[in-house]
Length: 612
Ligand SMILES: Nc1ncnc2c1ncn2[C@@H]1O[C@H](COP(=O)(O)OP(=O)(O)OP(=O)(O)O)[C@@H](O)[C@H]1O
Ligand SMILES: [Mg+2]
Image (tube, rainbow, N blue to C red; front, side, top):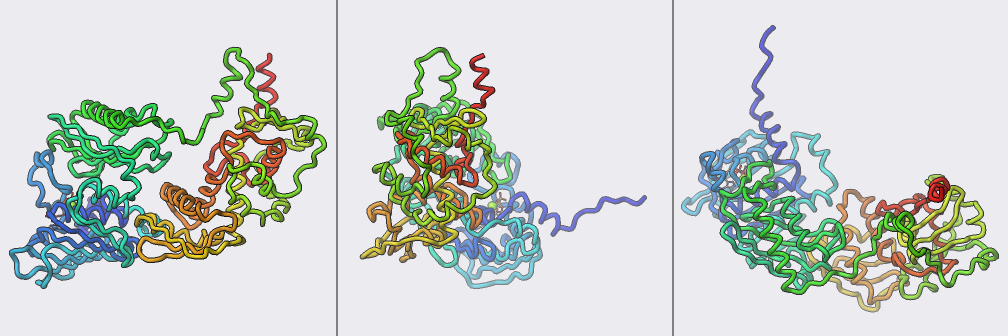
């Protein structure tokens, strides 16, 4: 048999290698912007079209390249940044592999114009799928101007794997933020489809953070500073009240490179111990300066993971520095977090040693009253509002339009067979436990419902229906309310405008990073509008918008969260009855919109066992 192993053609080998480095438009941005920083640029301007699918352009005023270097730059393993293995441990640049440009050129159509200061003429070079199409002299500015067109034009499958424009662009923003945060001394800008998203002048660390992540952060940042022989750590941590459950702004930058590092995250979390509820994430922006010989950056293709020789020691410096900073500013535990008590806690009291029973029954509850009270006929929305004083948002009445719909035949998907036709339901014997849970008997046992989560589920499904039906009532503002946001939020809110319109918001773009609000849902107070929109934005930011459907869902989820009754609140018997009835009209009554358990049934057998 003849030999069967063949060397792959260069173009194919390059495409395969590119898979490691270039996965999506954001990877191109990362590599080109990092190169521009390495070239000593003072200004770096990025233009993106269609979330990078059709064009990514990075223009810098750095060192530029000679005609020969411009050609060599696209070869694999061609780099000016290291020349031997030891150099990897002396590295001060972002790049060192000589892989990025070769990878980009293998999967796109690339054009580079570049000139060094000492040259009169620059060069233009065009490469399509690793093949050099032209190289000639050209008049151009000092620096480099890379245009990457039609990414993955020669790998249709990779193109198909890209997600929505929104999602891809949010990743581009993330990469842009990481590099520009690490270099406040450099001017950066980012344009998307000719619209300015960021324009960051040269500045200091604090200014750069607020330009990138919003001015409101400034008031909450606490400086951190520690300098030892091994490492110096500077930057900011945010007060606990700005912590989030997900997607907090958490930045670790080592020698101007954004990295992830588990034990450093853990150290920071320890510093916040007792200041945050479990699993909440603080926000921080911490910059490490360390001898490059102390770290190994060559352990991950995207160089975001770094090994430290003295990992443990640095972690303890870090923990001490953050603790000290928080202590100095006399930071107190935050009290405003949602009470997210676990069900297990509740049952501890049932299982544990003898205690006084804490089954606190609603004082206003009259067990005989319910036997005569008829089951609710209409949606409970208006009554919730009237009975629940200020805790219930006016937005509730948005849903009056649903009264009819609620009486329609119920979907068959109702996932829990609760035997709700049982005695308990007929007589409506509901009790409230710790002003948090609704307890009632069902066929199979004792049903316990988390009242807040139940209400979130009810509202969530209503909002979704309302968005589908486009039924709303608007109050028009006498004068438009002007609402200014940061560039990322501008993009997020712009994308949500259409869906918000179906809920009664009349909002339009009004110049750079600004919206004009012309109308709001009829029941909303004009003074609430900014707060509500900010809450909505926070949530949109946290949820990765992966498809159009998810925009709707996240709006519904957020509004449900904002408007649901508090986790702990006394309910009248009628309110409990209505909530339970609304809940079991939902398609998925057993889970909250965030996927948490709403209903728990203590089975008859289980209960019997407790008394055996
Ligand atoms: N914007 C730029 N200005 C000046 N020179 C550049 C620029 N971009 C790339 N180069 C030159 O091209 C070379 C190859 O770039 P490439 O990004 O492929 O590799 P690298 O940066 O050395 O390593 P890595 O693959 O880790 O990024 C660089 O070493 C540098 O000499
Ligand atoms: Mg590079």
